[in-house]
Length: 205
Image (cartoon, one colour):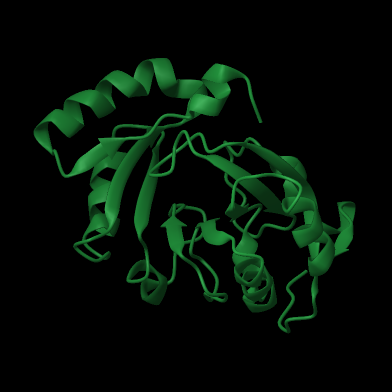
């Protein structure tokens, strides 16, 4: 399901308060809104239950905000699934009115919508990001599954702005094998940083 209009309701798989585990905001308290629905379909996705939006309730944006306001952090991370399947302008407007900073985690494969304070694009081979989205990225996060992904990462690094933060993150199930390769790559290519899924090591959401 793709919502072409900003209807004020969104399919939500889950909402939760935790620490951001990855990338630039790693370690920060944040309220997460995981939208349901995905047309990318990564084989190693760890939230495949988010893919079918019909399996999850439609929730009014005002109710999303009401839940988020129960917690002290004013950082909200919108993720998925693939959140850009939906027009997110209403959501980001409501979050800003409630004094939240708005972050999105996306593959960048659908048209950008919403007013974002931070855009993290994590390109996927299964459905490429739109070139116009790459120019908007504050953070580029490449999931490294095998050694060929380093060359693939450089392809997308060439498409972002010079201010964009660059991260290489091992695919979780191959982290023992891949993390040492990432460390050596970063030592030779210091424009990149290492991102780890610290929430998984800590066993928190």
